[in-house]
Image (tube, rainbow, N blue to C red; front, side, top):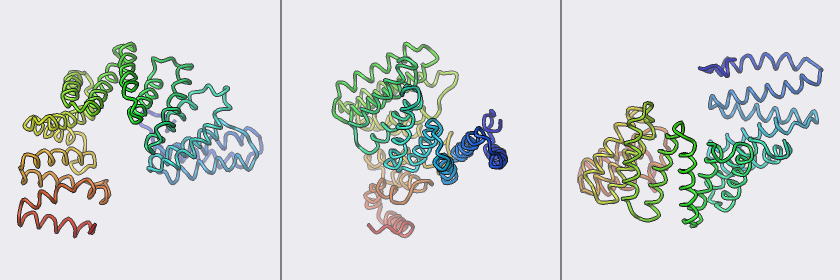
Length: 360
């Protein structure tokens, strides 16, 4: 009850599941063993939602080991725990480790309902995205199509699950240089959202904007992104439930597109607006503001407004949640800016290297 409440209290959930686990360990009945493993998995799930991945991993491994010790075959439970372990590795950025767990879970769920089950479809989708991250686009495409096939049999093509897998397929096709197929796949996604009706209008708006931004990169034509993003922003602003995160992000992308189109004043205006929209959602030092700050700094730099550029580079450098190496690799431009600012620039450069101790 604590776990599924409108405002979940996972700490309380863990407390009560552990009480149940303590009782079950004293019982001999066969069904008590099944419940024991299930509740251990629930503890892992609660820790997972608390972002305590170390404790979640420990719980899931405990459940899997218990099944092995008792020579119990429960592919659905084992598969779910392996899936969660894979998700944890993915969140930690270890996509290779995630794939090891996903493959084990896939083998388990292949035996459930003759392989026609939603968890297997979800696993193929997760694995496809891991392969994308690792640059193995052929396997990403294969796994995305396997996910689509199962979702189609279970839910049909007019379902978010099917469309998400289709989106991963489109991304793999783009990366493989199969642009005609990728564009057709993206167009199919827009059509499917239209068929699903007004309840899914937001998803259609979001995808059309992403599609326009991607197409503009492929065609090297910023005007495509400008048209698509302006339309998406207009549509999001008039919705009864405005999606502020997308509004902030699309405003930033619109600023970038104007910058590529050499419309510098419009670019700066949109990038400033993007920062304000991000600040309305996140703390001013949140990592979510790194790109808006950096992009505006870059726009000012190209206009040789070096004081303004350095100001926003410094704000980008001050965000929390990004490691020093990432910041240093993304903030190479400030040193060019600093070189234009004499003594002020020298002080900035000296302070940066002293604080980060990154002579490279």
